[in-house]
Length: 76
Length: 251
Image (tube, rainbow over all chains, first blue to last red; front, side, top):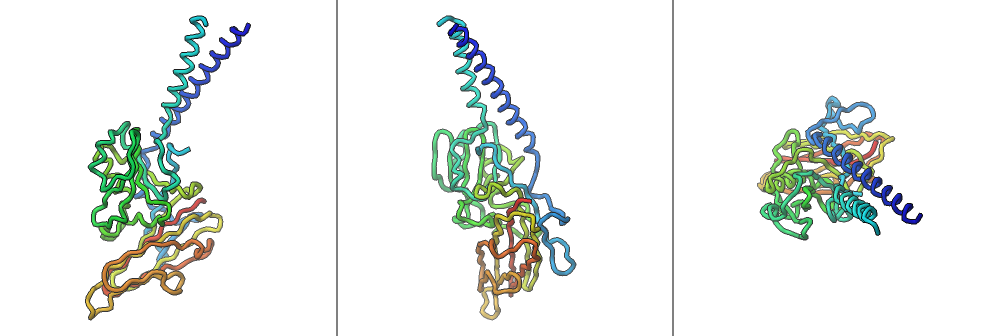
């Protein structure tokens, strides 16, 4: 009886580990697929809801560049 | 223990080891010491010996990672970013957490116009080249402000004159950093009044220089109210002046 439950427990453990491993692989793959974004040269548009910058003469933008801040995947 | 159970236990242990190995961890990155950073997965794996030619100095080295400073052309040693490189391919350039984010302005080789690189992106590029990797997908992050989701870089230049711009941060935003850097390169001639100044909202200058080439860094956090239009004015006599702002916030 004990051996039977031990066997069942081990099977469930193996299945759980395989599922978690597959999930980690998928998460890593998605992170790499997002790596094509190029943040530095993107200019922001000074529309409502954004931090805005403008010069005095005619309120045109003073060249602000908006860059997303993204937590690295290697940080918990 | 019968053969079947032995196989199951072995499979479970193997699965646990594989799961641990599949994580995207960069081993022992000093997150508690880092401020503004730029990072990229430069390669699938890196031989740390390939990085050494890129470093001006090496601070720490283990079998899993190496940390050093990377020289940026025309910049002083104190401006060299720290760079962490791990064997699983991560390259992270960063400044220590006690430095304003405005240290990323590459003043000494910036000639005006739209800014296309930072000292951090340059450092990552130098290391990525040394290891035969890529900088595609370079991203930024500030380890001091995990809730900040955006960074705005504003840069204004003036030549022997005065210019100004306005900044408004919506009241609904959370602001984590308003860091500045002032650069001035003015005539050394005593016949001219080479000098540079930067002002906030028409008050006293928060940065000023005399004749020569200088730059300084600081923070305006606490002096910048959300929902209020703030004026940054730069004035330079007999030379070139630049003021850069780095805003870090969450909408």
